[in-house]
Image (cartoon, rainbow, N blue to C red; front, top):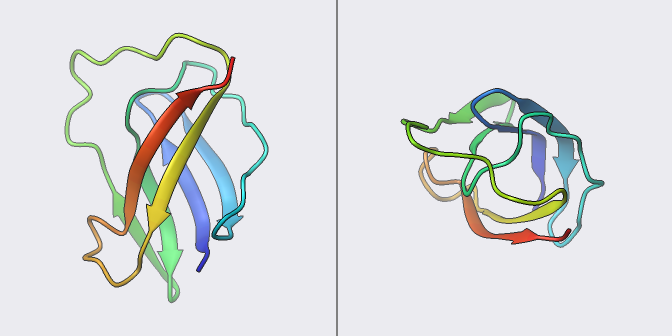
Length: 93
C-alpha cells in the first residue's frame, strides 16, 4: 500500500515526498533547519487530506548529522491519528 502525497513536517520545515510506495525509499530531501526524533505528517486517503500533527515541539532540538532515514509504517485501517507510525530514525551520515 502506498502513502499518497506524503508531507513530513518539523517545527520550521515541511518536506513533500509525494506518493511513497510500500517497501521503497525516497530520495534524500534538504531540510534546512534539521530533522527531529519524530515528525508530523500530512497525506491523502481517498481524496481526503489527513493530518497527524505534533502536539508539542517544546524542548526538542534537531538531530546531529547530515543525512537521515525515517522508516515509517502506514496502515489505513488504523484510526486517522495513527495511520503513519514512525518505526525508526537512522543517521546515515
